[in-house]
Picture 1 (cartoon, helix red, strand yellow):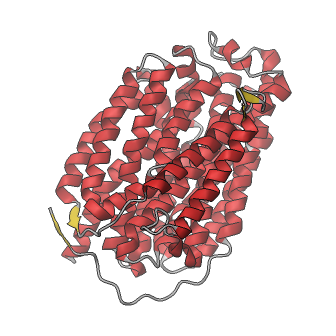
Picture 2 (cartoon, one colour):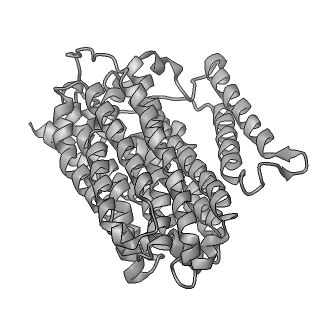
Length: 492
């Protein structure tokens, strides 16, 4: 019993840092219009602050999971927490959009060091048969953080200014460090050799693809510089990605991406599904916040309050869903949750109109969104980790979290490109937002076109959720795993 209690104390300590970095992924969405005005930036520059964070978060994850195996998840977690906390202070002190982008990129590195360690500790300290409850806490943190972020951000931006959405991370980071150092055990380590060519190929591929997608509209999908065009850069990124996968198969050293893990059907399906969830969750927040503030004239706080039903229902149901995962096949839960999320986003798209008196009805799809999210995170995460051994915990966690973040960064880039393209179609350009900087709201003549552009943009995250459901519905029956022992280690 004491060992089990120790596992839960450890997990609670880790979840504080995990919750903080996930809040930071979405908290900026509600502050984007204010940051844009304060730093004299355009929509694309402000969205790069999010994309830079997600990019430097996603790229190292395949390595940082292994670092936890090699040097111990506790050490790497604490290092990541320090980097993230210091970078948060730097973000708040930024006086230009360029400095903010660099500081956010540094934050992403800290987040990448920290994230895989939480899932690895779950895999190495909880048996598969009861891992659903542990994953429910992890899933609740993920779901609630990504949905509470805008609410918290709205209050902070209105009360203290956008800088404080970053300053608030400093005391939370210090508390998380103290608790993790006290309660997280020192687990056994496993020797690893790091695949540097794989790191280079992966980094170049992902950056090229994201840059081409997000900047494509800005360059009119033509030339970027000299002979380099948007399409040639995108093709180059895809070729580098193919080269990365080939190298993982034929390289002599230990692969960065252990393709053998994908022999497990549920691990493969769960990784693709969580990538599409990352696309959906990240892409859905941005159009809604711009709509609330620039069309309806809401303050950041009032905009954030619109997401309360989502956060409440997701948070309240997540622990119950976690217990249900241990008894009901995750295929049923995850697929139902994803279809519900997609329905909520299609519902949002149908009701984004320039009529402030109808704001209350948008609470209905927000409620449906929370119901769907509650049934999504834990079932997918449990399916991914169920068959992982202790030696594969770090690598598997790194792959899973990397796929989620790859989805998030691609979602951020894709929604930025789609929003700009829709603004061109419906308003003749993306300059509409700049006309609202002084008043906080668009002129009436522009509101209908802007609303339609945001509504059409919401179709992207809705479609991504349906694609994810197409993969979770194919989850195989779980194998019984009676023989399991926790990783060796002692509390520090």
